[in-house]
Length: 470
Image 1 (cartoon, rainbow, N blue to C red):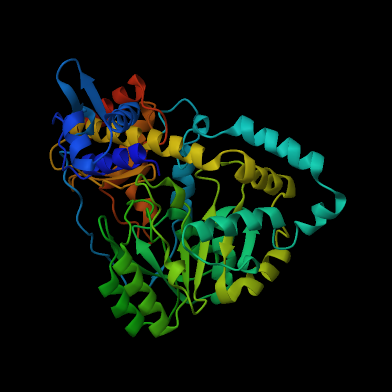
Image 2: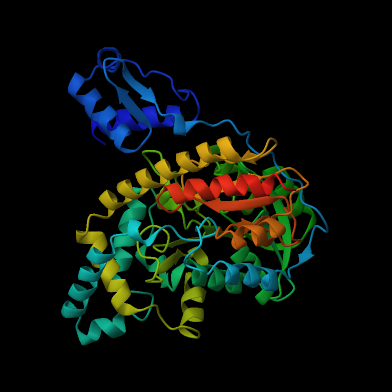
């Protein structure tokens, strides 16, 4: 990173963590120049960058100040105990489908959306890469890309692993129809109907649907909104139950946004090795971190081939292209064969388009713009919640992604809240769809993945009014 970029990221981190409070004056350009040993021009560039991200503002003859929208008054939720049986039959699909069907209206304020705004993605540039890929694709390449994946794309993905500190043989990579196919194939490779799978609680609702479809039983492990999956509970369950696999998000977990730090990732990996249990590491939000460097995945520690690291371009680049992958460890051959017996291959032109874009399209430049937009939108939603949601509300503060998890007073029923909100043209994702036992009834996930507008602000006002009716 350039010096001004590093300085900007350091200040942004202080704002995110509340060290620099809303309305607080930043150190003067002269002070920072002296303390950091950089030129005044470097400090000005950093402050201009923070202004563009909506984190600070300049006041004539007064200096630079943290914007009020960066306020964080609502407390963070605590870790929620898992209710019900330790091993649960999963039956959430009807509820999930009914909720998802209700979110399809394009005219609603999309707080319930699972994807960021399409306008945040470089779709015209991707279309040019698609056209170029089709022009240059020979007949042999069409067939070659159907086994394991497009070689150029696999090379580009492997290269990004290496740049992130993970050395990975290309032949361990299998290109898939999005991360969901990767996760499905991995789970099928290591389980049979009736087996136990450790999952997070709350969990990404699609993971619950996969377990239900494959007739697997869920062992719910609570997730701390700040520190990630509870390793003490996991160790207890692994010692007492014949768990065949773990399905966790080590970074920016959906819906809480929690991330494991490096020491907890090592502790998790040691548990997996001790019990010989494979990990499906769902890392679909890996590129959406707000800090300067992406955290390394558990896969970086994997010498035993136990970790199946699944990623996707759907959340960060090309949502409609349905291109994901898995670095499947010792299960790479089984996953590739299973794919050949089902979908055979993702779209070869889509793979070629993304491979060309990764090589020539300015992917990292796009990611910086995307992260800055999401960070600004997160601050706007947090500030609106501070202003408009009732006392007793709590909210997570993830350092990336595009979701906030709200915990409301116990009297709130988020399924009823959804019905009331939809009648007002506002969507949200209610808590029960994130639980095998349909818990978290007083919780909801809201997305800040779309540009913040006056309409967004009015929707938060109205949600606050609806919450006050319970």
